[in-house]
Amino acid sequence: MSDQKESGKAFSKVMINLLKGVMYADEDPKLWQHLLNLQVRVRDYAREIGLSLEISEDEGFAWLKTIEEQGEGEELPRLISRRQLSYPVSLLLALLRRRLAEHDATSSDNRLILSKGDIVEMITTFLPSGSNEVKMVNQVESHLKKVADMGFVRFLRSGKDTIEVRRILKVFVDAQWLNEFDQRIKEYLLSAGGEVKEDE
Image (cartoon, rainbow, N blue to C red; front, side, top):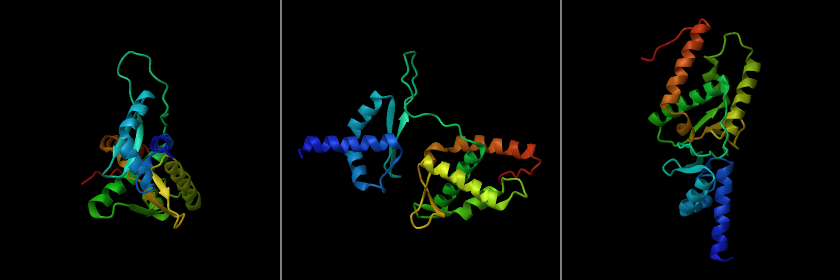
């Protein structure tokens, strides 16, 4: 195969993977290297369809982001649709983001691995007391699958009861998002007659 054909095939593979979701260096190191080598071409192509290429080489992931039009010209249809998150999914994302921050502050391991039991324990605090435990675990599993579909966690092959929190979560759940969500949590707990604990 000529170098031109091989480069074209590598470019196609990179674009297809990016259009399907977040690309991780550790999942396919060869494809990741293609991305780094072809990133100028990928950026140009993405811009033509209203997207920008974002790469975090330190964290080892890349993704496509919709370019928000600032002018008065005709906007392109959004290729990547916005998602309206339910309260439980938003809560789960916020709790996982906080756990990732705590992990980064206390561990040299780049990967945060949690069991389903850990996650149920985290979220229980925010659910009404007396909830049916089996029903609650099933609901948490359902929310966890949605979070996995969004690419923020992945189930590990070593055990379906274990997940890895993906580091792309840091990009989409930033400090401002967390602060706004904290405020909504306090309002929710107050309206439910719960106790609000202020940070020390």
